[in-house]
Image 1 (tube, helix red, strand yellow):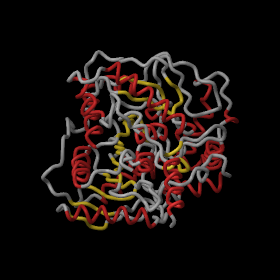
Image 2 (image 1 turned 60 degrees about the vertical axis):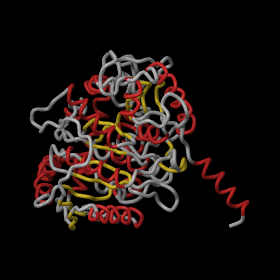
Image 3 (image 1 turned 120 degrees about the vertical axis):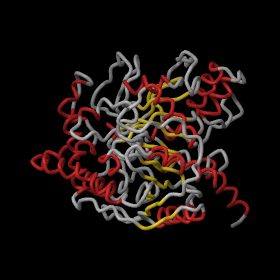
Image 4 (image 1 turned 90 degrees about the vertical axis):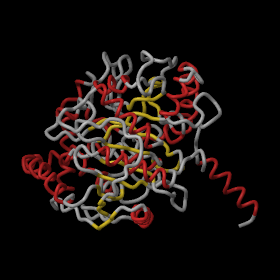
Length: 479
C-alpha cells in the first residue's frame, strides 16, 4: 500500500468513526468517576450538564441518536445519590414528565407525559441529570435503530453500520463519549444487542430487579426489564446498587454494591451455537472461544453445554412478538387520539399479520414459552454461568435490517441475527453483554454474553470485573 493510499484510508477511517471525548468537565471519566469529581468539588453539576449537552449535540449531528433535546439542561436532583450530577438520557419509550414519548413510531403524534414513569423515578433517585431522550426503532421491535422515514442511528465505530436496537440511540451516545451512561430496556435483547454492537457493557437484570416496566407488566409473560448501557463494569454495578435503594424486590437476593472480582472460581458452560440453529459467524465464534480460553487461564472451568429449549421456541417467540404488535395496533389510541395502525412500519405490520394468522396457537405458545425455564434450569445443573455470543453475527451494515426490507426477507435476517438473547427475557434471568478483548478486522466491536440463574447479578458482575481487569475493553477514545 502506498503512502497516499494509507493516508486516504486513514481519512476514511476518521470520517466513519465518531467520538466526542474532549478536555472538558467530563474528560474521559465514567459515571462513578464523574460523580466522585463532582463530590470533591473539582467540577460543578452545572458545568457537567453544560459540557455534556454540547457533546450530545455534537455527537447527534453525526449519529442521529437523540429524539428530544432539553434546551436548558440543569441538575434535577437534590444533590444526593451515587450518580449525583451525572448526565444521561432516557430512551423514548419511557415517560419523562413534560416530554413527549414517541416510541420511535410515525403512527401517532406524541403528547407530553403528565408524570414520570416508575423507572424514570428510579433512575432520577440515583441523582442523574436528564439531558433528553434517545431514539429507538418503532416500539422497540427491531434489533437495529432504523426507520422507513428519517435517518438511522449510526454506529460510532463505523457510521455505515447499525448501532443495534432497540436501545440504539442510548448505546451510540455512550460509546461516542457524549454521556457516561444512558437508559436502556430489554424485551428480547434490546440492552445487550446495542451494547454488543457499540462495544459497551449491557446488563439485563433479573425480572423484578428494577421497578416493573409499565408495558411489560400488562403482558401475559413479562419479558421487559429496564437498566442502562455503560462503558465500564463499575458503572453498571453502581447503578444497580443505587437503584436498589429506591426499589428492593424482596423476592430476589439483595445485591448491594459489587466492587470487583471474587476469589471464587466458576464452572462456566460454553454455548457457541444457537438453540434456534442460526449459524454463528467466524468473527463471533472466535471472540467467544478466545474469551473461554481467557477464563480458563484465569482459573475457571469451561465446558461445552447445550440449551435444549423446545424446537418451537423461535416460532413461539415470533408469535408472541406478533401479539405485542397486535396489542399496540388495537390499543394505540391510548398514546394518541389520531393513532393509525396502518402507519406502523413494515416490521410492525408484518409481526401483526403473523399473529393474526396464528392467534389460535396463543394458549400453546404461552404454555411452551413458560416451560422454557425448565430447559434453562436443566442447562445450569453443575454450572454457575453460561458463556455465549450475544448475536449470531457481527453488526450489519445499515439497510440490512431496515423496516423497508420486505417482511419475509427481514424476519429471516432478524432470526439469523438475534439467536441467543430472547431466552433470558422469557425466563426472566440476568444476562450481560461485554465487549470482547479485540475488535474485528474492520474495527467493529464484538459482544460476548454471560447468563446466570435468577438473581445472580453479583456473579455476573464479579466475572465482568475480572475480565475487564485482565484486559481493558476497547474504547473509541483509544481507537
